[in-house]
Length: 164
Image (cartoon, rainbow, N blue to C red; front, side, top):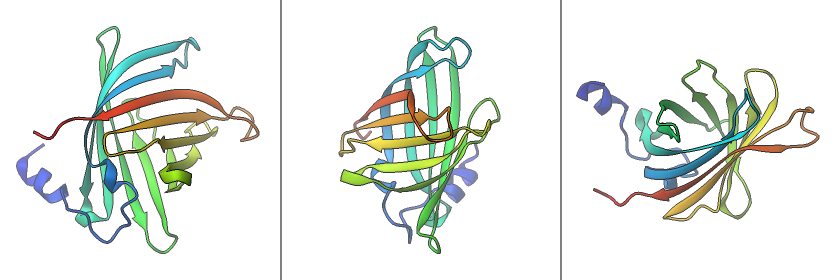
């Protein structure tokens, strides 16, 4: 990405509420998730970087995953605040070209709850929990029965990287 593009995207916090702003920075992540093909749990690590963009109206992240077998992939999420509805519109762009769309809101005890659907139509709930200045836990749940029950299919534990 060119310096001009980085400069055009980058912003300081703006008019949007600071729901995601406390995540701005770089995080080292332990990741475990259910493999959609085998149903088995897989593990790896990630580097997850958050920053304000679009004149402080959105928070974007970029995530680099490294699987235990050494393979790498990346993805990005854009969270745009909608002042009329007082919600955040959240879109994840993954390497497979699928784009889940969710709505983000404050949860209880400082959590952030994001709810939406997978591209296959199943309901999802992605939550940032146990958020502090130095760590958070991210939980990804999916429902196979229209939201009657939920199962954990991804968990990430993040620790803030020291500032350079």
